[in-house]
Amino acid sequence: MRRGWLFVTTLERPSTDLVDRVVERLRGVLRPDQILTSKTDRYNRARVPAPFPVHRWRERVPDLAVLPETTEEVAAVVSIANELRCPVVPRDGGTGLTDGAVPLHGGIVVDVKRMNRIHELDLENRTVTVGTGINMLKLNEQLAKHGLIYPDDPASYPCSLVGGRIGTSGWSLIGSRYGHTRDLVLSFDFVLPTGEILHVGDGAGGKISKSSSGYQLKHLFMGHQGTLGIATKATLKLYPKPEAELSPFWAFDDYDAAYRFTGALARAGVATFAGAVLFDEYKVAYLRRDDEAYIPQPADVRALTCAVLYGWEDEVRVGGKRLFRIAKEHGARYLGDEISEGDWAARHDRYATPLHGRTKAGQVVPMSWHCEDAAVNYTDVPAVTKAWHEIVADLRRKTDVFDDWGMFAYTSADTGVDYLTEIDVGIWEQRLDDAAWAMWVKAKRDIAAAALAHGGSISACHGSCREGEVDLVPRELGRGFDVMLGVKRMLDPNNIMNPGKYLLDLAYQGDVSAQLAELRGPS
Amino acid sequence: MSYRYSAENTPPTPERASEVAITTHEHVYEVDPRLMELHVLQQTFPNWDTLRIMHARHDHLAWMHTHFAEKTVTGSELIAEIEDSR
Image (cartoon, chains in turn orange, green):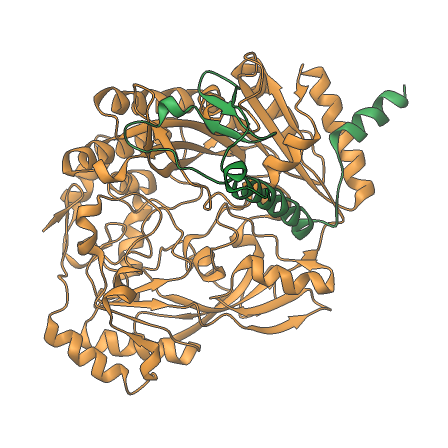
């Protein structure tokens, strides 16, 4: 069975007999209501929001799902799966955009949603220890009673879970102020593919933010898309809940001016600066179709920049005034309080928006949202933006299945060094047949190649293990990809943990140097 | 809510907001019906439901602000403070 480009899988779906034996053994470690085998339970855990040809949904359905409630139950499930050689796929919120939570070879989906307890709130050390099935919004409702916040803020904030943020090493909208998931998670309990339990953090600590003892294993067990195991309990860093928020939006009559202004904001060194977002001309044109804030904007509004500041009110006012002075120097036009506040509040929840696109003739069609992302230095953002729009324009010329919804560039750090660049593409999923899917996979590969050609990384946020971009991971990581294969083989000797992802099946195929050389292409 | 069924199901006369959008109720924008004739057809909404959805959206956004911070500082306040300090 071929998947992707050179990638030959080593594992097929479990037989019915094997599934029956797995279920029988699981009955010894879980209650009946924790083992789900119905069609509805399985189909509901087969997909994530990333588009996929609907007619191939069946390929991704697990054989069963389980709902463990403790680390020990997760370990028992994984141990049985490893003994019987049955695939295991960890699933948290299922909101990721690179298919980490999607089974490619059936098996057991380990759904962690019942592990959603707050185990300990340490007000003196400012930490909270939680089950990884907890959602950040629900956690912050509890923390607000103590004047605290866990500031991990993805676009899926109301529906993603802490464990998924660890498995994807997530990116946060306000990460320029508070850091991203890797900075906010201090330590966690982790079930390895053999069923052994490991605690990783800085050193051996549960609540240590900086250690120089031994290898730094925490990062290894984040962002692996469920290929190395399952995080079950995590200790998180807490901050005072901000007293004040400021989220101004400014308009420009051309992209270049907005780009220069965004860079100036990010480089200003304002301590409460939590992020800036650049909207390009394609994004503004898209918003003019359907967004109540932008339909009435005058025609000379062609690009936008927004910034957001969080902190004590006196700090936010001083920092905000500095940003407004920079805005005046750059000829920015403030869009007003209503749009600024409304649009920023909507950014915390991009998954709840009903979506539709347009055919080339202008007719409305139902479309799902997909975004390709990359990490790119500030100086390369315009070139990558241009290259990506050309790739999507080529798709659009060929078919109405795809629609260019424009691009954002988000600051990733407090110095403005690099940006999460994102192109949003509407996809008419019901029309996504094999031919259109092949076009999309090629476009994804071209999009990733453009990011690499400009010195970037394939993904700042989503991960890079879907068809298309995954072919370029060995090129991006170089020798580091060989290390990934070695780590995978050592920790998961039977390839049961989320098999088929990240080209890691190559770890079990002997000498793959020729395949890797071809994937990497000419040096 | 209106007393008569017909009143609740008759939206205000639409006004053109752009080449692709119209307005009906104040602050309520809709896709131009001419663009929803083939693949997705427009649905009929009673007035109360249209306004409920709009107000619910505003409630949601206001809730989200207070979820992340105790209060919101507005840009217009800061612009006024900058101008006053000159």
